[in-house]
View 1 (spheres, helix red, strand yellow):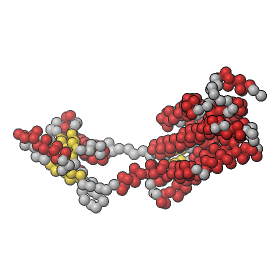
View 2 (spheres, rainbow, N blue to C red):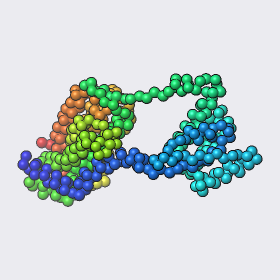
View 3 (cartoon, one colour):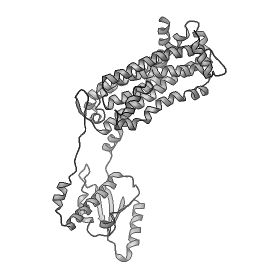
View 4 (tube, rainbow, N blue to C red):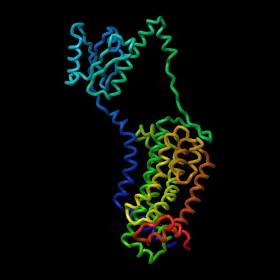
Length: 421
């Protein structure tokens, strides 16, 4: 045990005191929060400018109402939309339209809205602008014209516009999540999907990152023959255990720091960044499960990557052999869409109890639907049993593989290693 602890300390110190670890540990949560909040903050900080739009109204009845409807104001109180009506003499239709397009091109105006005479029948208008990706302007113009056209159609039908507006008033729906314990919390799609995607993505990246680190560390020790020196003071099982537990402790340190950051953001973030409450309305217990499923997922995949490192002799060979392991991690990501729609479906429930998929799928189910303690503990127990069996199998491969050089062993040879006592 003393030798394993010594090896754990060696691996831990080598990784934790690297600048890359410190930078990643600090920057990862900051970047994650920044990427989540930045778009909204930028929209709020966006400098406002007046939008100049010329309108050619061939119906002669929409322009005046649209100008009244586009009454948005900027922070300084000025109208945001400057709307001008362009007269269209019948003899110079094409030339006037081309002249207006040139003004758009030369940025004398921001846009040209062309309302054809048959808009009531064809339901089409045309908007010319240098930037047609500004959805705020597009939606305001389209929505304004649509509402005016609807009002005219209602009036022509002889129906009362006020009655129509009353009976067709849109319905707002608040979504409230009820857990199996009966607790209620107001949650929306974006909160559920965003938090699930972020956590799952972090699990996926870190499981691959630390698994790959184990594989490369073993390869490096084999190729530099350092492993032969290490074997003089420790047996193969101790070497494997020290490497897996050492790098696992590094990852655990990182996860605990991230979890503390997340809990602090939930508890106190609203006082400093009010918008954070809109995105990070997450139970602190989610962060506990986040750490638990990282630990279990790490051990599930760490032993697989240790086996890959032991039976290969170069980075190129390892990249080929590790593809099945990466595929096992990709499968849960491919099922995120199905999982968000129905986290308690039979397929998702079954897969969340398969140890190679459980770290991601069961954690995502906990975040989305509260599958219950029985299913959660069953998944955890299955992973622990799998880890125990995997360590026993991989230890047999590891003790032979780390001293094998040259030709990569085939499957029959690996099966022989398992029979060695």
